[in-house]
Figure 1 (cartoon, rainbow, N blue to C red):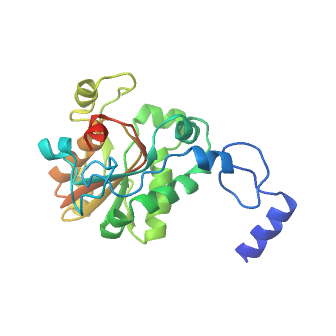
Figure 2 (spheres, helix red, strand yellow):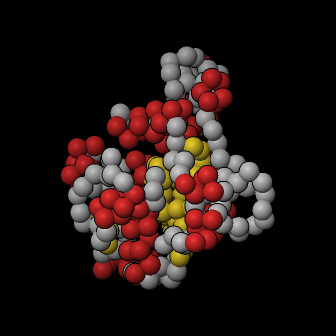
Figure 3 (cartoon, rainbow, N blue to C red):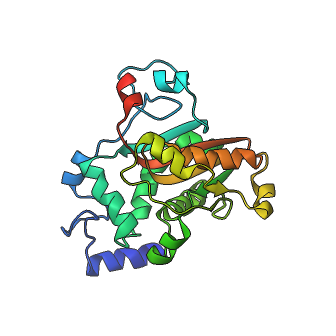
Length: 243
């Protein structure tokens, strides 16, 4: 019943592009927007997801990840965080555009298929409590929920709790690490859910990886077997240049 109903609705109210108001035959981005997004295709670093120019084989890591392995096991990003993708991410985060989560989670599903296949538990990065009160929703949870449903994985939004407030905006890599040191905890009653599991952590953007590492550290301390990370977009960094 849902499919015929949606077809009838599309006939009455034609779908609009998610990036602007032009009419389309199906919901999604306009052709112009698709051309601007830089999707990150294999081959990529198995550790941080930075793309390689040439295929170096399965499981190969960039120089930065080889020299100093991350707390999390692997990371994947659907696209580069730049002018083309930034607007979509910020609309999801700040403009109540939660309908974008369906499209962006599909991108993650494609980029992180291997991680999703192996995951036993999917968890969003938790939001700071005061910010959650202001925004009323957690964009990471909006991305994680449809992924768990699509891949038929256990969804665990409560396994991580954020203990500290404080913004990451404008901070250096070391400043970001200090800001999130000890900021996350697995509540005692949630440890049995995490113990022995391979957890896939979902967020919108990977910048320095400080938040993802702090979350992974808390999950591993609580008994998780391993932690992977999947995001919509990642910032170009030193590891990218070395790849």
